[in-house]
Amino acid sequence: METISKTNGTFKSFDGTPIYYETRGDGPAIVFIYGIACLMNHWHYQVEHFSKTHKVICFDLRGHHKSSEVPEGKNLTIEAIARDLIGLLEFLNIPSAHFVGHSFGATVILETYLEKPELFKSLVFINGFAKNPIKGMYGLDVVEPFFYFVRDQYYKSPDIWNALWRALLYNPIAMHLAAIAGGFNIRLTHFKDIEVYARGVSQMDLKVFLPLFEALMNFDGDSIVDSVKCPALIISGEEDHVTPQKFQFELHEKIKGSEFLMVPYGSHCTQLDFPDYINLRLDRFFKENE
Image 1 (cartoon, rainbow, N blue to C red):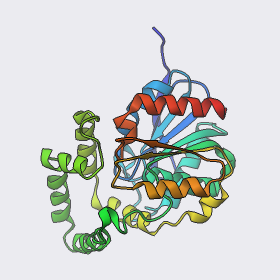
Image 2 (tube, one colour; image 1 turned 90 degrees about the horizontal axis):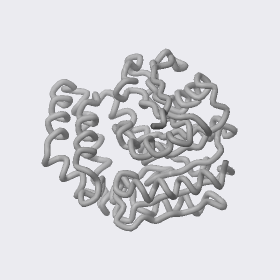
Image 3 (cartoon, rainbow, N blue to C red; image 1 turned 135 degrees about the vertical axis):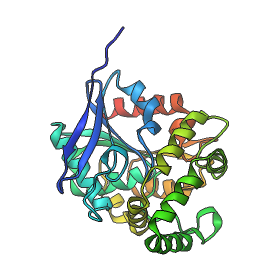
Image 4 (tube, rainbow, N blue to C red; image 1 turned 60 degrees about the horizontal axis):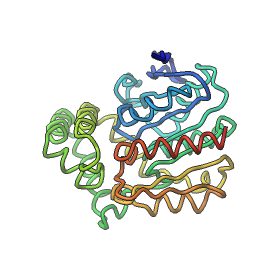
């Protein structure tokens, strides 16, 4: 039976924030970056598959899970996360890698590319976006005003809103609603993965989630997208209503020579809906761009 090497630990980022990471396997490096309020479990099929042939690197975004000890109120920005990622690769002595980002992970990749493009062998966006995906979500313009309402109320009564956040998110009804809204394809994704996600999101402190979500809404990476020169693969879920296909089409149109894959019946978490299909497509893309 083949033994796959595994390491985990933390390193101190530029502002002293401890960033938790895990590596598995040996070979060319692949970095997997999850979306806001998500967790490493979103990549468990990809980690299992690619750690047999590659060095797979995952890490917790600052403020998330085992990287939660952020200096009070400081550096909860996309720029800071990009600096964390650059620092992690320096810490691990990785001169270049393939990068795969899901949802908000795509914005982290873009910001990292802006700072240090020489790190990139290739990049993959899964249901990603380069600018605010919230405006007009579900064909309505209510999500953004609702966010600012919640943010303002949270600052008045943080303990009450954190308790409400946990109660609303970690229950079976909320998990089914997340699937119905296009976050998962409940006919394909194992419910255990949805449950793990809901537990992880519910444990996030709103003092971390709210500023990062606001940074997401204010991000505009169009000029960065125009500058991308490395090989790129854009993957889109046909049934993703969280970040609809138009965001992925825009990325494909702007990145010269990029490849595009539309996944029928794919939700916002296409890599959990169709893991074998996604892994095979990523396999081919990485081999072509080693």
